[in-house]
Length: 133
Ligand code: THU
Image (cartoon, rainbow, N blue to C red; front, side, top):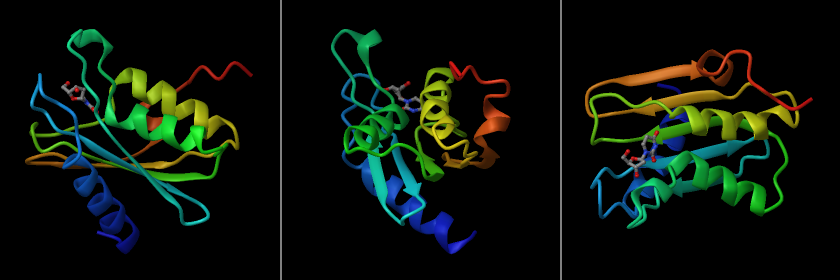
């Protein structure tokens, strides 16, 4: 595993400790790496109205864009030890794609579940993404 990948996954593991998941008990952490070396993390944030729950990847993107980031996304790590394997859900793929589309980047997506790891380009997870362009 590359040093970048291991460091980013560790940030996702640390973030998972801060997950707010009292309903599913499925704690997820996400970490975004930007070209300037900045890392922005997120956790899932659940709600008593279950359908309003937010995934860790979406929270990380919202935090980053709320801080003014508009591109430069190099990689995402997602850690979800409650499942054998994990990859971003469809909604998160589209949310990630919006940020990536701003500078036509195609970030790496690294995942770690209880049993399996994953590695993709975002474009593999969401081919023919809708960009509004
Ligand atoms: N979840 C994430 O945060 N990211 C994923 O990639 C998959 C699912 C969250 C949503 C919900 O809080 C919990 O995991 C169970 O689905």
